[in-house]
Length: 117
Image 1 (cartoon, helix red, strand yellow):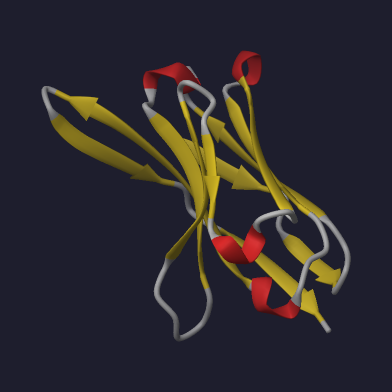
Image 2 (tube, rainbow, N blue to C red):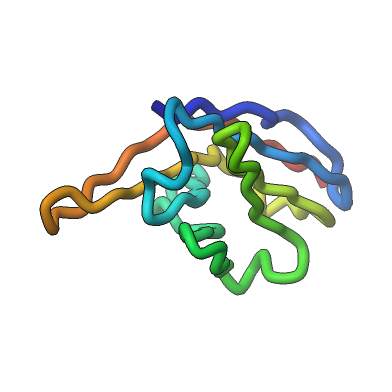
């Protein structure tokens, strides 16, 4: 249901924009976001956007990354600027919805982001 694109190799200080296309309206999810997982590390939340367009970021990306949503395209974006080597990871799109009081989560397949120093 979630298909990511936009990963790749970039030099430190560069920019990338990740896209996550959902198979249905983004408003059917109560929140969508991006996680990342670097080799040997746990998956961590990078950024999240709610149905009400409230956003939040992990401290290490504040001021550099921006999450946004195009409702007409059912797509969520992650604009990543001033990339650092430590941003290297597989980035996963995530969406959650509540069904009969139960929270259900969905994951994309992941897209590799590699930042060379």
